[in-house]
Image (cartoon, rainbow, N blue to C red; front, side, top):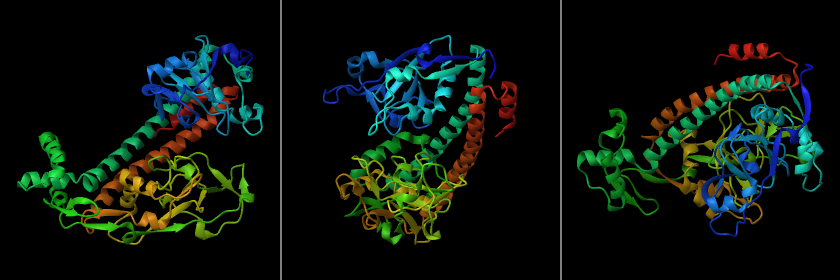
Length: 464
């Protein structure tokens, strides 16, 4: 390490604040626009601009000594998620599981973040407590940190930040693509926009229950995105009433999912083979599903025991959660697709169902979107069993009914949705390369092992 580097305590870099939760029993503390950050929100993103819960001005005022400004560096210091770091994107409040440091201007806050982001195991190791490990404010302040001169801090943070910016761009692009595919599904199979448009164009009668929606479509005028003629004509211009789903397009039918697919249970893998060290095999759990659906690439559970080929998942396999340990059953029933970018093998355990398509008139991307709809989610929750642990079953999932065109429209959606998925997979490949380079450079830049010009050259050469 270069001689100009210095060793300081974390508390020497600025003010350390431990978060606090406003009283939940006081009406009006929650539901505003002020970020309330908990360890769940520290999801791997560098900067936190959105949270699951928000405070009102009243709620923030009740814990005013715990308010932190934008650019504060937050670290989770209690419980199983301790050691996760992020930067506050705007003024916010954290809960008591997070210590934050408001970094003085003589130091670079992004450099401090990158330093702390590499020290999860160290923070866990210094935590006291057995049942609930904790690194309190005093011990957090005493953590050592190695610092080069300020201009080098800024340069190192810039090099790493340029990679994170590109990583974040790819993530946002994927979110946009997912939203576009979801919006297309909702337009065609939930709101029936093409049918309403056809009815408006042909002067056909629209049911009273759909009149408000029809008025909204008519008000759009030329702003409505016209479908290609070969797709528009696949949709009828009238509705018919069904006892199960209400008004659906004429000549469509109400079809339970068991007519389209099966759900296969996974295997109860033995706990004695769970591994704290990374292994080739990763046992997927409901923790690898996002609320709302989608694959969540963290909290991997590694496995080192024998595995039958029957329970090894393939790329793009469609999965659905069958069990959720959380009180809110946050991920119960939601789907995810196995990603293509990993070199590991993913294993199918008993808490997850594998969807097997049995009808050649639909594809897994269509079914994936069906399983992300609010109506489906509400039906799964309403029939869930268990108290501490919530369960659903293949029977309950397969009983869910959808409006079905008979295979006229669904294949077209599948084709269009595949174009979104291909772009997402390409972005995921880019993410993998960018993340690998960042993870390689991060410890070497922070230790002075690699020179900044060399690191900058490596970033420039990774042209994606």
